[in-house]
Image (tube, rainbow, N blue to C red; front, top):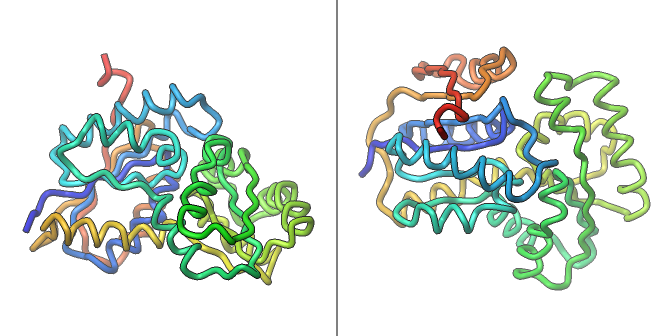
Amino acid sequence: MDNRPIGFFDSGLGGLTCIPYLTKALPEERIIYFGDTARTPYGSKSASTIRRFSYEVADFLVESDVKMIAIACNTVSSVALNDLRERHPDIPILGIISPASHTVAKTCTADDRIGIIGTKATIHSGAYLDKIRSYRADLDIYQTACPAFVPLIEEGILQNDIMDLTIRYYLDQFISYNGIDVLVLGCTHYPLIRRNITKLYGGLRIIDPSEEMLLSIRDALSRHGLFAESGGENIFYASDLSENFVNMINRIFAGTGSRVTFKNFDLEEYGR
């Protein structure tokens, strides 16, 4: 047993979409979450910049004595996962792309036409294509980048006409031209607009990597003997502690009785 917290890392508030699945299934686990809200979005930045930012956050989480790191960010998982594992070989570091890809391979058939949407960095990396095809080479897979989604979501622009128009700008032709019937939300921010997508394209089956990551976390806790015996305080750090960030966490934990602390943390000062 190990009562140390699990470290979660995202470029902003998107990774929070993973937290409800964890708290429901494993309520005794504590969380230290870091959202790099001051420097989001990562998805339009260079690979070298993404790696540098990722090193800073991972180093901070390791120094905070987490027992594992769950990278709740598709962009970081696609660009920096192996580098982070080499940098911190003594703790499990989990990416979000592998469990989602396994679910695609397990649940889709050769008749499905699978669409992957994500940030520019995630799509250009080809990480989803490579991982899914390592499981199943017979699947039809298409992908497109949707770079405006994350900034709008971080600003709280969700259930309204602006977001719907942006979704249609990126997805109308992509879905119709390719005949997409399965859509992978290849960014942890995107589940926050899942309702919009379902409303606009009702026939789609949607795969949410935020949900699939729980299986990977549970498996790693079991393999390494890291399950916690009792709960405790959950700490949420942000490099720019915004109202949207705080409000979303409060909604997640409302009525659970869990102790939640918010902290602003300047990564640029930390890195000096």
